[in-house]
Image 1: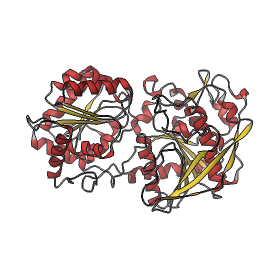
Image 2: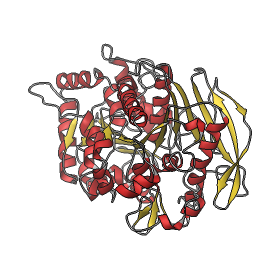
Image 3: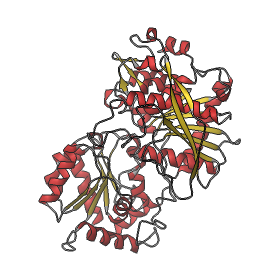
Image 4: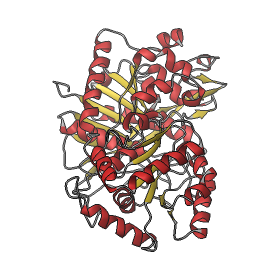
Length: 511
């Protein structure tokens, strides 16, 4: 833990409790909140999306508008500062006052009408990065650490070492860039360099900005940040080893291997707590598990399943994407249904997988329940009411749902990748060690074998109780993770104090 409170600025494209699409929002919101509880002064720069909603107890005030350098001209940005019950945590809302209103539109990354990414996302998030730094300057404070999250925030790592190098607000600033999911990199045509205020002479093969003839935002963050982190130790190793996990950036990451740290995400264990969960009608804990069975019955009723015959419940709460292993579900659907279990699925995403679950529910309404979209209450009920939780990911940087499941006494079935491998260990019925069920290869038969082991254990009350206690007794809170971030920030600040910062010239020489 840092002995001295720091002033930390996060730059991220989503954050709970203000706006959420996926796990990135949970991570940024919980990390920032825990840092504030420790005494750090934390500011999170966030796009002022149309859908941003301030929770109860939060308020905001408008700040001055400011023109933002944009290519050969300028675009106007508007700012507001929001704060909640903890005065050490603030959110800088960054808006675009230009004609195209980059953020005052429905959807976050995608246009809800088409389901596709907005065609001007390259401009939207480049502007966000440039404007976020202008907004931080408006606060007239000095910051110790700038922490960028994923490719939407990557350009801030470059701008503070180029255009803003001599700005007093960022003097002696240390930078950290976190990879939450390397599968989403922000790859666009090279004209974006002009909007970033950089000359075409900087675009050439293997330059800091070039990636197969285009500009890669993720790469920009990777090469300019003082230190890098990703969201689990296993994933930090995987992304350096080849194309399956490195997604084309494994060479860049291998060159920065000494600067990359794998820090396992935590969960908000006050919010995800079966003993105090406001979404549950029946609360429970490791020493009073009766409530779990009552939640199980409530879930069966809500899904419209018959009460007899008795069958184990297997849950999934996920973005419906190829990354999450739904190919294996598609391949093994008939075999899964033959195992004598029921399946409850919550999520939205690719039409192919939504159609798959709609077909399965229509054909087997007594065995499959699918709910599209995201429903926070129903997600908590799935975690509490299911007997097992399935995560057959092709790759998984960290994963949060397996940690929620362990806390709720719902043993996870996972593929041994990324953070899933770091958090779930195969249960051994002979020794009683382990907290879930693990398979190695991305293969439907291996997944089915793991599901069978899980169902067999569920049907043996003594073994099932031991397995549940193992998971519920683990600590996956942000308290441990923030210790690691404090150490990372300290290391980055030491580098800056020693004059070891990335500049345009040094980056061009080493990449």
